[in-house]
Image (cartoon, rainbow, N blue to C red; front, side):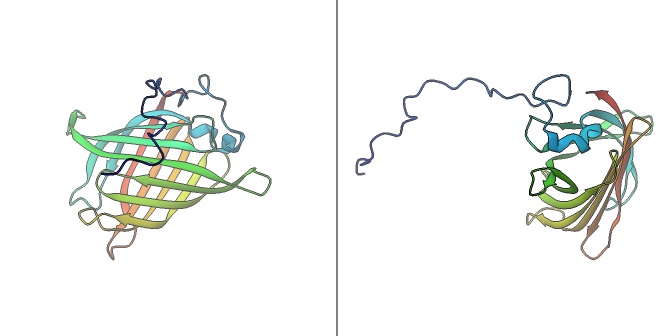
Amino acid sequence: MSDNPLGPPPWLNAPPVEPYPYEDTHDLRKGADLHPALLGLLPFVGLWRGRGQGGFPAEEDYDFAQEIRISHDGRPFLRFEARSWLLDGEGKPLSEWIVESGFWRPVLNAAERATDEMEAVVITPDGTAELYLGTTIGPTRLEMEADAVAYTPSGLPLSGAKRLFGIVDAALLYAHEVSVGESGLRPHMSARLLRIGG
């Protein structure tokens, strides 16, 4: 093995790195100021928890609980994190369920101001990725439809998806539809979540 003609890399003997210095927050009273481009999405920022019902592509409908965190770090995008768990007939936790992670971002115009157009990406550990184009409708409604979906060889063979979000009576309501193969869009999950932080 020949010696590196450029010498050792500059990070080889560097001191340890301090913890990540930038705070990601779902609480608008803490952390970085909300980026001006996100003002149209301000009502969605927070920590939400509640119950819902799921169905297709499962063989039977099921009840679940869910927690969604929508946060920011001062840049012009929101982080979307959701975790859900199945409930038994008495509303008790039965097992872990779907986990999602992604980002929402408004489309900016030439003057760097937010339009009502949105782009988003959502991925799951089950090997699926959904890339969305959407629109904000007023300050409390967001509609997104998948422009592209992808899945790993062992992932669920998604062929389409649509998500609707709205703030109604201070709660976050959403509906998520998916298509698998040639099924066409069918109801997948819907829920009503209450703000518990932010």
